[in-house]
Image 1 (cartoon, rainbow, N blue to C red):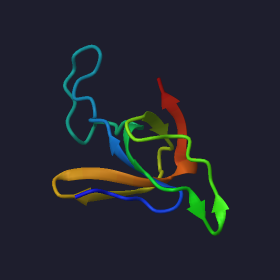
Image 2 (image 1 turned 135 degrees about the vertical axis):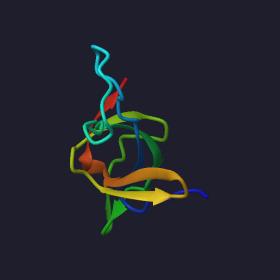
Image 3 (image 1 turned 45 degrees about the vertical axis):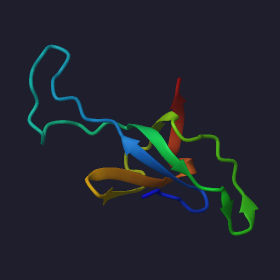
Image 4 (image 1 turned 90 degrees about the vertical axis):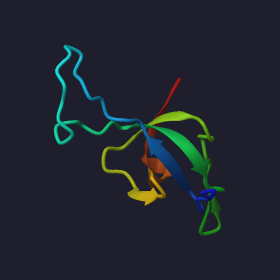
Length: 93
């Protein structure tokens, strides 16, 4: 099954949360902070209400996104985030 976002939407696959701290302490799943880094899975065509929005990311890019961005959803066993292009703050190179 392939995800095809519409308009200025982007599908992200969030990185896994760290299970241990840098000093080696193992964190309970509730104490783990969700990372704000993700991999771009799919990108929309950038057309919204007759306007063309520049989509500055492509599939495979690693990005940092706004903490409360988009909607989380589950497809099969995998979890994804669907957000607007404007919710992406930076690319990680």
